[in-house]
Length: 407
Image (cartoon, rainbow, N blue to C red; front, side):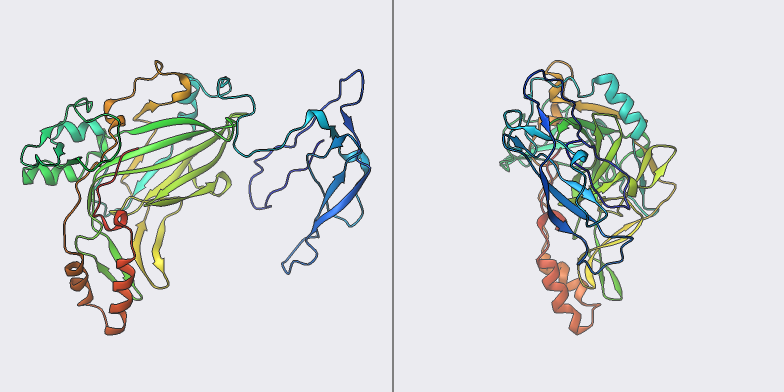
């Protein structure tokens, strides 16, 4: 053994102990340490413990280096037989997240068949709030049902979008010259806003992570529209008018899977402009290995548990309400692999819309001050100032004033 592995006791084991065997004929590649130095102990921690823990640094003999620590449950130094040090010319300085053998050798990354197998095993369920009115659709459904491309300076002549997005501007950067919007006809616009869950699909982007020891399977969900937000101001729940509305909403979760054994390690849940990683042992599963994901009402932020998450500080914030309902999406039934660069440029043909890097919705124009005043009418005097300060501190992405970009 070259070093111990440690993690919190309340999580499923998810690491490895590095071991080595010396087959050299000459100078030994591995040697015992000559002593130990205590580098940490839990004795001083004022927490409930089943027992104390101790971390020891092995002292390597001359010409050798230590590459790990030893953990014990007593004050006594561990046995020198417990660990080995490595000859110095077989070691190097560690650099987090860098390649060991270079990006050219990615044979341990999943191929197309293995990607399909992994996703069928771990494809999440997405539960929508029972009151959700704005559901996902496929990108092609949005285009076919009247999605429009606008160009700055030519707003009176929007262009219908081809089913694959082949007439969308390709590459470049988000320069503000192009954006997408809903159909002009009011009846069609309201219908498209609601999405089409039955025929929707998710989009997969697979890439190597942590030196290709893991694969990240990003699962992107498209919503034609996100509805207005609600706020909680101490004991009062209030609608925020048009605040939070925007066209073309993209949300995602990411599955991190081990390339050693194919186990699900953790999931990233996107939450508006941020997000969080949740260990696999803390997830809710349904139907075997399929994790449950909860989409917040109107805003579509992703969470691992149902309930209320307040985006703010103290007792004032934007409500992110999630709940299990009969409105649910099994992502494994309808998905499309749209990108995996490590497989080569000819293995997967990326849809043209994936290379559209501009905004998927217009910049919504409304008077924020007027919207705030409408809300403040129902608030007691002492809460008005605090609420206004909170709203003015929110990013445009949350306020819904800026159209979001794509995956």
